[in-house]
Length: 243
Length: 269
Image 1 (cartoon, one colour):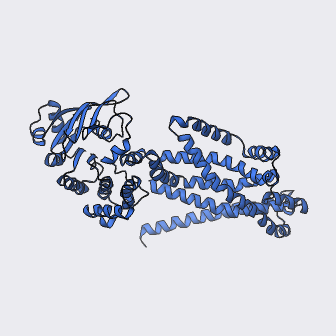
Image 2: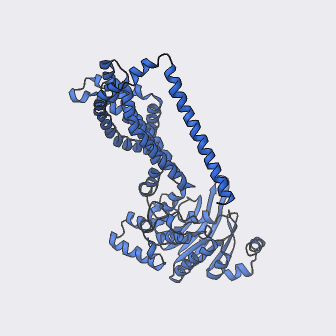
Image 3: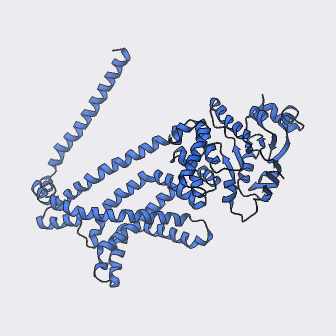
């Protein structure tokens, strides 16, 4: 049984089918990269996994339990699945530390002091120890995105979703964020990324899925998808993306 | 001095001279022509009488304390009721449907009726029910009229503030496992309130002035007191004195609100 299994997931906005019968397996500790043009459905798929968007049909199994079941309390699921966004979405009225402490405090998992030392440890691990009392607008884009990752990690999630998290960054800041992803991978975190960083996907991913018009057109290990794509759509996309 | 600096210095001098002379011209025109009006002597005596002003000003200040007190009691009530109405109008659950209707009706009614009418209807109507002594005070019911009217406006401003918080903030908070209520309490509302502080400041300034409307149903606040002095001295100067007292409060307050507004504009761009 895979950690995360999607079976026949369908999501529509009006008449538009954004996710069209998606099947996907993510094994424990695997890093899966979703690639494809903007509008292919990568972000929406991630939002469906985190129950930010209700699916029209299909099942999403987390440890074998269907979390897309209607009527289920989404809060518990979301606390087990962390998500990081393209535009950081830090809370501007809170310091970095307060950003990271908010959700665990709301879920009453631990005492304040215990939690604080744990979260501070996370900040230290990701090179942000001297930034915990800064507000988001006092941080660079790369630092903000790393704080957003720490904020998601503070809940000790079992799966992490990353939605084009380097797309809003200056090129010289992309590296520091990708390094964090590699660190997480080495620690055995299960991760799903929507990304335009083809070089990173080829290097780090365990599996790459190419999406077009809401469908997974081709999937496989990065060597297979990047070096010997089978489908003409994938070949055309990669020819443009790797140019 | 370089050629450019010389040129800029000349330009500066020129605009200074133009601004100075045009201002002088306007003031001179007022000083020369207004006293030439046939009724000026009389107006000066009955509106700008130094002696009357000196005699009544301390008492007017005393009466202004009543305004300040009513204002200070109304403000927190308006903030709380305004927020509750805003929540009522935004309530999504079907169980809250009646609440939503009530919120909409409340804002429609109290924004649609002139303040003075509300003050009359509530200030005279409710004591008319035959309430016992302290509870039929026009101070109480007049204040309630102000609270209801201003809550309707304040609620709409809070609502616009809540809508001004970008939906991605909600997504981020929900993705962390927060409940709808926690998202509102910790993420959306603090930002919304911050966004509307300048607009709410302007509502407070308007309220400060509208407290005077209570004079129509009894309370002796500054406007009423000025009216009493007008009758006693057969002179309108006390009204001018009252206006001066209002300006002393409202000018710094409006300037401060403008400053906050400008600061926010800068932060956004």
